[in-house]
Amino acid sequence: MTNEASRPDRDAETPVPGRADEPSPSVGRRMLRPLLLVALVVYVADLVTKVLAVHYIDPADPISIVGDTVTLTLVRNPGAAFSMATGMTWLLTLVAIAVVVGVVKIGRTLRSRWWALGLALVLGGALGNLTDRLFRSPGPLQGHVVDFVSVGWWPVFNVADSAIVCGAILLVALTVFGVEPDGGASKGRDAEPDADETRKESHQ
Image (cartoon, rainbow, N blue to C red):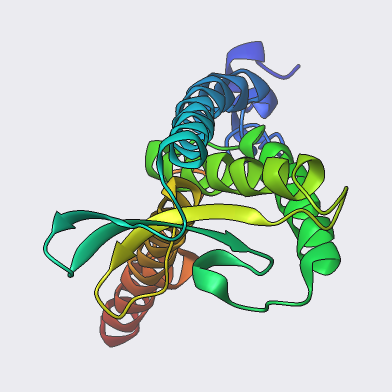
C-alpha cells in the first residue's frame, strides 16, 4: 500500500498556464481609470485653450509673450501635429480614430503606470485634434485644427500636439529601457541572467 504522505503534491508541482504571466483583468482596469483621467485633463485643457485662442487672438495681430521668439499666433492647420502632412486631413482623421480605439484597447491590459501615462498623453492629444477635424470648418473629417503657440522657427502648435509628442517620447524611452506594458522588464534583459547561470553550470 502506498503511503498517502509519500505521494507528490501534483497540484503544487503542476504549473497552471497563465496564472502568473497573464495580466489580471482587475489590474488592467485599475490602470485604465487613471489613463482615462489624465487623457480627460489633457483633452479639456486643449479644448479650453483653443476656445480662448479663437476668441481673443486676431490672426493678423499675434500676441507677444517673449519678444518675437514666443508669440500666440492663431492659425488653422489642415495637417498633423506641427503642420505636417497638410492636405491629408481626412486620412489623418481616420488615423486619429484608430489611435483612440487602439489606446483604449491596450489600456485595458496595462500594469505599468508609466505606460499608462504615456498612452494617456497620446490619447488626450489625439482626441483634442480629432474634435477639431470632426466639428470645425470646412466640414466633418476635413476640419482644420486650431494652433496658436509659436516658438521661434518651430511650427505653430497647440496643447494636443505637445501632449502627443511628450507621450510618444515617453513610450519610446520606456521601450528603449526595456520597460514592458505589463510592468516587467523586456525578455532580452530577463534572458541575460539565465545565460550566465547556464555558463556557470557548464563549468562545474
